[in-house]
Image (cartoon, rainbow, N blue to C red; front, top):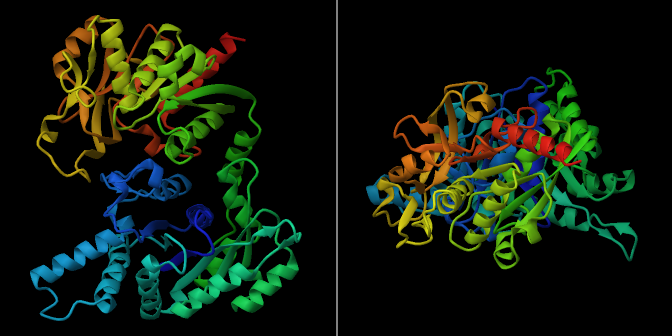
Length: 539
């Protein structure tokens, strides 16, 4: 196996994850089998208990691992299906070292950062290598910025690893910022020089430098960076701000032939030039669509770009599939509570209520679901959004006044949504929900069955504690709600729909975690199609 390590310098939020994912795309289109992983230096065991304000969305893998949102980019940009061994945090590393010490595995030795902590980090790379013998290239992104105290042990581990496996099998890529100083009218290379110098102090010489820049990278600056950072001029690559969509990133990096530089460094130069026609076709449909729909995303973290990242990307995938631009209106559901759904949401072609936790903005979400149901506006509820739709239906169609979820009102007279039986008594917050891929049975003759191309079994990823209460199934169905999918193992409700509505579907799982650029998730594709029909019908 060959190894690519992607580090970042100067500032955070440079797009290391997108750079790593884009390189994965290009190498896959060269016919190589690629796997990706993320090393996060924070002390949390995983991001599962972190606020979206701190970390953005939590991306859930098939095996139930709660991970960094960059793993979402990895799965969307490549064909890799990742697992918990593909995301390592300092919290996991130190937890493993302490447990080994308590078990006496270090045979009475003094436990130290080097070699014991660095060996644990290297051990994860070896674990991934051994469990995926068919993979050609493993791409590892290291979170944080070079110079951060938290990341030093990870970088030291990578330095050691490169020596142990042989530098001819390793490619270090450093992503930096080239700031444009408006007053001087110049692009400055000094921050990049300082960042690389810091990396070299640690003992790592980058093989390729990716420069984030608003404009193109002129030859003078390319030569200057090459000279002061001790790399070949052609190994200084521009990573420009893309104009329309992140899916342009692989095409942009291809301009400087980064995939060719990587395969030459790793001795894989025999691979063919990447065939990117399918990717280019997708990008063109995103940039130049024939149609347009407006979809309201009604949640409590709508001001945060990354809180619903996978949902926004899934809407883009579905839009491109239907040659349609999806214009997203971000709706704060607390404002809906204050001013009403019609005033805040207005005329839209679809309403999506995403997942979430806590009772803030909940009544606004219920009003949004009611607005969609009564006005025949396509509605898609995901996780909490499905539960919200159920509460609204119970209150306003079944006549169950004050129906609610026990998450929001423990003393509600009608707990149509309640805590799963196995969740009762659990104290820890992290990794204790229903997590990961579960099999469900789709009921024939439903809209859901139609969207899933009449498959009778599906697998989808979950992240929740509360379920639709079995005591209310019959009452809801008698009033017109259809339960169109249930979990194969427990018979828990997975999808609800309203048959007398153009599109009104709620899923207990998170379909956004399985949507890809040229393969949109069927529920998102159906939702956007319904929104397009609504837009055409309303002129």
